[in-house]
Length: 237
Image 1 (cartoon, rainbow, N blue to C red):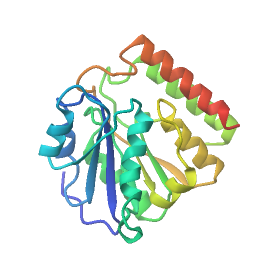
Image 2: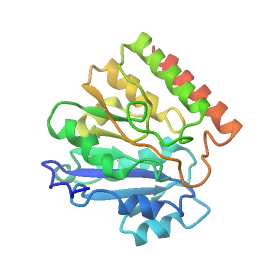
Image 3: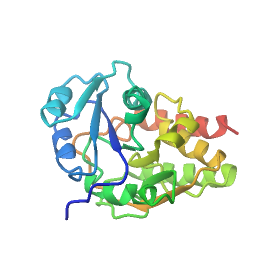
Image 4: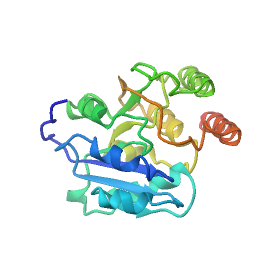
């Protein structure tokens, strides 16, 4: 894939990571050269060498000892918003650290934002190419149920709750993210719909992650995530 040209906006990337020492360097190596100013890996209290490996690969590493996907994302956002106003990013990208997403697809993900056509872009695995077995049946059903509810309850047009997403800084501030665990992605999407923000999706590729999923890979994680997503959807009615 050709190298992306320098964007007309400052882009920072936030990668929440929990025990991803086997995958994080590969994720960082495949982020398109010249596209991003800073990659922030938030080590979410890992018990392995995720932080040192990410730092050696060139990332800014933060440690967030409180468990929870949302806690990690909020810590990364605090880093972005802690800069002087003139140095804050125009666009923030969220990307998982397990190598299931294709970082090279980031160029297409941010394109609607760079063209001033959208405020929030979701990387849709439903619209893209998925490796066989990359999404388990419970994930496919959960995405279908959640996006169907978002459509009927909030008028939102989404096909996925995919974690690979890009959002304008001002839009993210307006959304006012609060969730600290499994409801993070759906909270962002339903609040964006309620605010009337311009939301779109782009197809992204998806593959089997490296290691075992902390959510879909366990019964406890699957049930916990499902409950929290549904609770979040009905909470904001």
